[in-house]
Length: 217
Image (cartoon, rainbow, N blue to C red; front, side, top):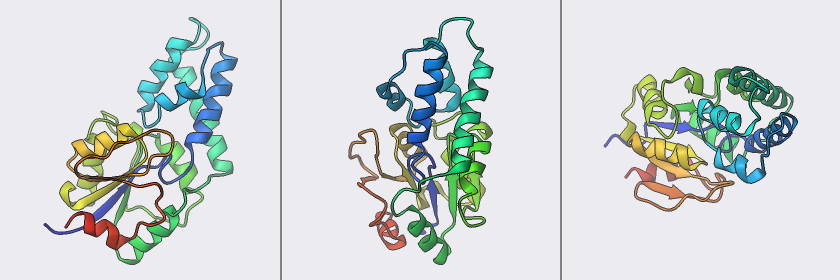
């Protein structure tokens, strides 16, 4: 085995604490549109592909109030606006990114979020922290399908077996595992059980390039 060749990062909830922003926008907008929607409902969609989420939201909204396309546009634009103003990075995320860069281990950002949302978050980071970005609107099948992570590894030119995925959701963890990648799970809102080729941690803070390397030995 070649050792650690790359690290593939999820964005929402893993790199940035954006699940909170998503929840706030969902609760406000869906109530305005006549839907009953709770914080528990928000949690069921963590890590979901946006196309799937829209279908779930539409099923709760009274018929004829809004089209799926309009709902998607409004939800996305309000989340993007909030993320452009301010983002909170998860503890240890920026430090780990910098340490990986220093050791020349390339990183990819593999997110279910659409490119416009990713750009809103990246506006708060130094230039080019990621060698490759795979957005939710740039793949055919979203997480939990392995396509997003397989695409990230392919674009980096590395074998998935020589990578580590960092995730906070069950769907993302399943996507990484299905792609044949070792997953470090940092659950925030949802429980992720222990499993083979998976390390569950409370925070990114203790992680270093060396600790990630040791997982593949």
